Length: 200
Figure 1 (cartoon, rainbow, N blue to C red):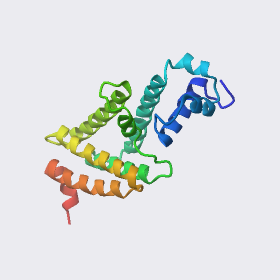
Figure 2: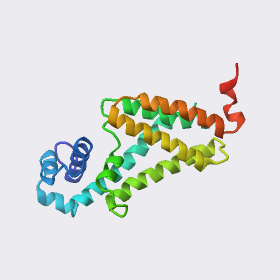
Figure 3: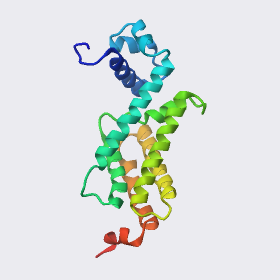
């Protein structure tokens, strides 16, 4: 372990993630990553056979970090099943409005590696499939008659809001997406789940 407390492999992942989020994938060369990580080229290739392998590892780490963040945002025992669906958008709004928001790394990856069979594209696509599965589980817990359909519509709102935030900045798109999600929940959840909102 180095003075930083991180192994050479972890420093490579951290440096690559930071650069990829700021500048994209193709624009960042191996030498930049090595310089920022403070490791030698031989060390890089001892851990990753290629830049593509490093990118895949970085994206998989980002998947883990994303879902850990989402689970933390939803880990509130006071939230009911319907509230947890809306809490997704509350968390997204905080993310979009935060100083560290740099857009969706998976969207960037799929744009730079558009071939569906490319390993980089596959990791990006798998993140979206996992997001759909999480939303489907939340919709099922909320009693939706068509949980996957509701989840698909909510995911469209999430992805659209994130894309707009990536281009325009700010959290307004996430707030608008939450309002639209609330309308969807009124339409697609059982009456008893939505009833408290309509009480005088």
